[in-house]
Image 1 (tube, rainbow, N blue to C red):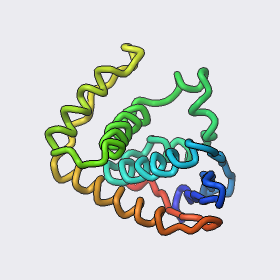
Image 2: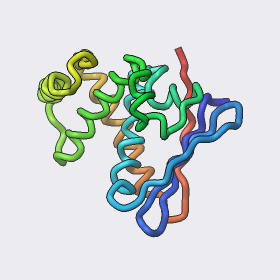
Image 3: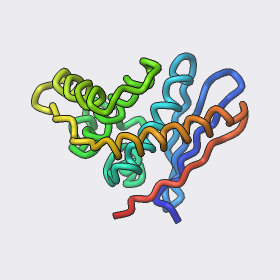
Length: 170
């Protein structure tokens, strides 16, 4: 059994809902409407691609599997408790999201360069992280995973749900 069952439901009105069911049966969920209903499914799928490809055990989905609620990530008090690995995963996801929003794949060296710039611009400075080293092969694997997930999401009809298993394998 996976640590987490991730379910992203596409609603007919353009909204989306993310539901995460932990191995113990407990659930956390959030509905996104308006422009967020378009943004968050691809963001959440990018998290999945990055965290599974890079082996993050305590990224967004790992913390959810540990019992965090989705709303905890927006809570100013809880934000200080977000571990380094989850912040690093968010940084990497942010770089791949920027690339996706630009509409074209950067070369691996451009992606690393943009990642370094993005990492240097995050604040506050005391929480700033360096972009982790990503080989050309790892970048290609993240892109391939993300692309396959985006295709699955595009094929998900209104009213249907895309479901993915998440396991924190060593």
